[in-house]
Image (cartoon, rainbow, N blue to C red; front, side, top):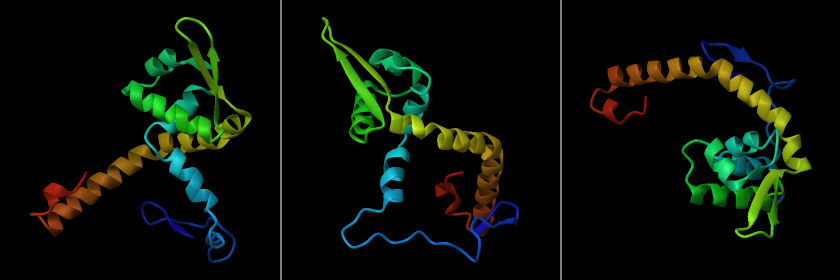
Length: 150
């Protein structure tokens, strides 16, 4: 069971609740492991940009606004290491490097599309909730309200 916005209660699982099973000692939690990669600032944007076609590094840099070349290179390395994208180097001068989605990366697109649609639909409600929270924080403690991220 999860609390929704505006007092709604949404039942996600049958029964009272279904907590995630704890990994066995020494094992990595698969959900946390995947979310660690996808939860960074740039990975999802890069994956979605590569969803329709492979791209060279400079084209990716132009397509993903505000990312530095260093951060793009680092994120691409992480995504390649995780098997979500492939990297192909053509031995020219200078070398041409192309990136695209692997089958695993492509299989991530339907859930990402659902998340993007959800975010587009609910972002105004989230913005309103943040503003209301900030206003409540100012009323409760005016001295601390300047530190609250609205």
